[in-house]
Image: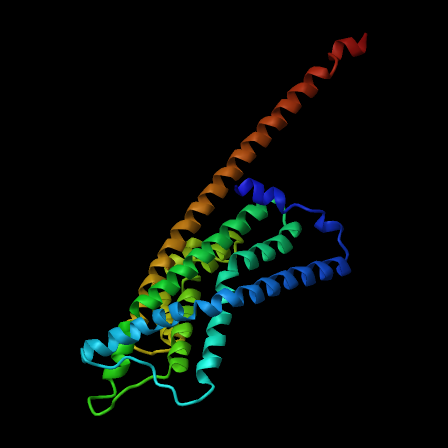
Length: 288
């Protein structure tokens, strides 16, 4: 399948003019926008499912404090439900259209890459998608703990009721923050592959990296609770160690390939020298 994707992406991108590239970009954007607009219809009718998924962590947090708590969202604006449903339908349409969007992006950038670069790019894209999805899923799973902390920190004298728009904003920001945080190893591995950073350098700065990771995790988590902070910081540090290992494997593989190529080149040079020596006539034959 990968071979077909790589082969299918091959076009004469190097012979395209700037105008051709702009036309190609416009066509890809039109396809993406058209698919998103079409998927707004099913996403609109999937709103009850989306709202139930959003309400789950909110209800879990409230009922951990009071089993009889009313976990319905609070609405104070007449147009808020319609606007919210339209916004959630838009996000859902983008989510449903993501395979098409990513395919169009791939079809646009692939012609400018060599075959080996296409393989690396495809691996990076698939890894980035998987890690982002895992980060978003982890954020959703720890939301009850985060909301529970935010409710309890106000004390028993405060009755907390969220509007669905505000809560949706927190959920989306949390999932995006965790998804972006889980892209950390992709960046480190890419920097090692292009030679900007060496695995030994990353290994020597483990303590500093741990501190930076905690600070970054605290900065990008919108809830600010300790559960979210450590739930993001711990995987990021584990990914840091994993990226060092992957970088070491890549460097070792490249070194072995270079040594093998050098030996092959030396053997070929020796063979060429031997062949040249055999082709030269003997010295006494020249004198006669």
